[in-house]
Length: 153
Image (tube, rainbow, N blue to C red):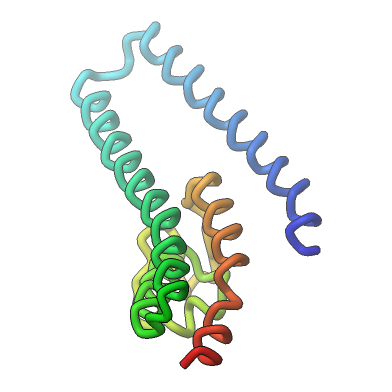
């Protein structure tokens, strides 16, 4: 039910992010035309963007792979292995955002890798919207598994 109500706000955030990216591209193009942008800054920016895209790719890969490992372990009745993979998933989520109390409770010692800082009350200000959506969908899918694992143990 909550997911259905969250879809319109997610779409508006995606549209806003797309507009912001278009504005950034147009301002970068204007700087290139003016000649005010320097080559070292462009190279540094490109390296930073590449490193960030690699990190996002790695994160999305792990977000897709860990639920499969959890379910595979549960299908084979390996409760300990399923719990280990589930905790890895919750640590990964807790490292990206503090929006999920269950993940934060199961990974209290994890530091935030994006702009989420508990001191200023922010959550996922710097997180990629596709990653945020993937985290939300996967978390909603896996949040009931601790109860199932306890029943199996």
